[in-house]
Length: 113
Length: 114
Image 1 (tube, each protein chain N blue to C red):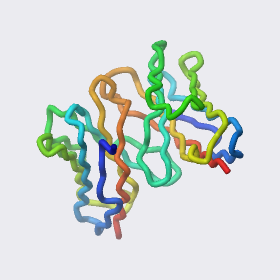
Image 2: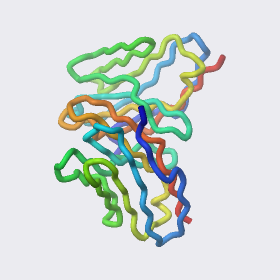
Image 3: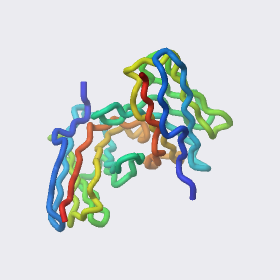
Image 4: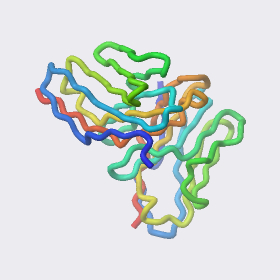
């Protein structure tokens, strides 16, 4: 049973445009959500997080939106840059242990120059 | 400063053999996690160590898997009698104690069981 789902395995956008990566979850008890970015042959690196008490968190070019009623979160990257090309994983946890994460399958983003 | 270090970076082993994977966390990080990523899948939680507390082993897939953390620092993940389905990238991560501290991952060990 996949509790965190990223239904788009890949996404291609033009440099300078907005990238929108989506993630759905099934367990309404999740209360902390994160996005990680992964380059080939490297470990994932933390990008941005959001607590369930918020519906938006912004950090530079990256914004995460949380829609609790729809059990949906999204990551917006604007403007997209070629260096953003990577695999993006969303993850969810319970606030009791925000390191014990349930990950989605990942979305490969390609930003074309 | 140094990040999370894992060794070996690649390991090829024959089915039935035992393997040990090593993780050196970031100095001062009290929490240590093991995850694995099978081909085309997301990361799967395996085990979690926090300070001197008993580890959370709830993610270990079978009793062939075990892990220990010596002196609150280095950790080893041991897989006994490896099977082909154990082939995956095994990732270690550490974090500071406390809520909402992000995980810092190592580059992983790619395990191939032939």
